[in-house]
Image (cartoon, rainbow, N blue to C red; front, side, top):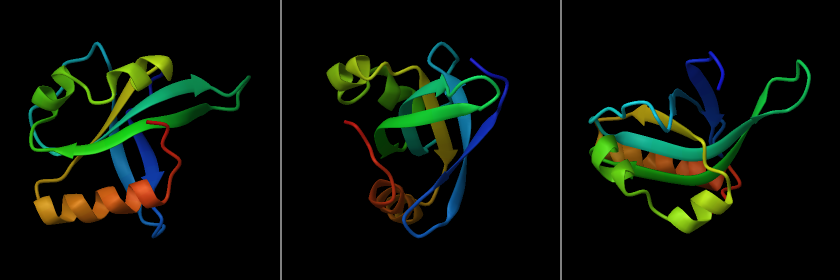
Length: 109
């Protein structure tokens, strides 16, 4: 889609989180953390890209969880084309970050 390797997402707190970008066709790692399933598209000539969050979740193993994605009908309707992953081993930290991201963003599904 594009050559960018990371995307910055902010939560309600204003804290910025660096997510790795994965195409749906790329192998997904087996570590855990927070994932964002999104529709990513160009905004126009030289205007960059826009990310529409469709679903945000957390897991202990990205590969296993995303083999059968949650809210599949909504994802397909929302033109899901991109996966953003944030590796977080700390389960408690994951829950705090997930709540912050959900509270600070519009999520379709």
